[in-house]
Length: 294
DNA sequence: AACGAGCTCAACCGCAATACG
DNA sequence: TCGTATTGCGGTTGAGCTCGT
Image (cartoon, rainbow, N blue to C red; front, side, top):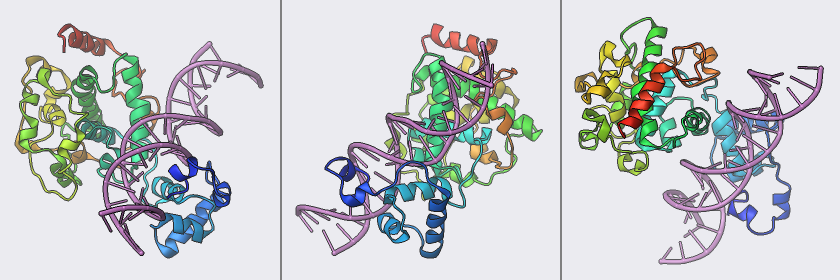
């Protein structure tokens, strides 16, 4: 029984439990943990905590190591490339944060989860709709994500979105089989809400090589060349799908890009100076969504 | 400068899955 | 097979920070 979880909170705590520290980690504790793991490796967290002399639970040690102390943890703001990838993978797997984190090197599930809650859900709240609603997903898919692509292009100084493909294999692995795609991205108005059936694509994990068409999220805008900044695909109900041009946010993932200043305020790839607010296009799009009963 | 509202993110909680004896 | 320990995950919380007034 782990002392921090059920055991700790259900019965009366033991003497040892009451001796446990909680709350923010001190620098001394960090040093102890890092040094211990450097010498003995990680794992067996409860035993590790005891052996290292840390008055912390194994769970706490594990969390601190994985989310903060690990040398390969990336810090700083989520880049547009990462944002795209998060949106794309979330559309497929829902709140499977650890699974999503596997495709964002150096990012932790906690960080991605926080990003989603603070940035994405905030905007859903502004729109007074549920973050899992079809309306919100369509707004992401046909409005914001294409703009992210535009921003990335602008930052890269090229019309070619794919500037490098370090993780192309990864997106090929995670892309669902063609039968899962259905006709959804040929007719966005029929796009299924797939955030709740995350388990359906679990088989396409990192160890599975599945080369297939892109997801329904990415298909519409990654393959439309310069036309992807408007909503032509959506309005016509027939976005261009080009299977041989498979890519994804990871296809142009570039950790060296610095969007920190622009990302302090918002996740939106907005055009205006105030990128937290809706512009005319946004409002028009949103009104169309509702008037069409989408 | 002071204050309050809103935001961020590290840490905790509870539960489920898995490992192990 | 069963009971216990451990690990991993997603949801939630709250302290501290930022920003606007």
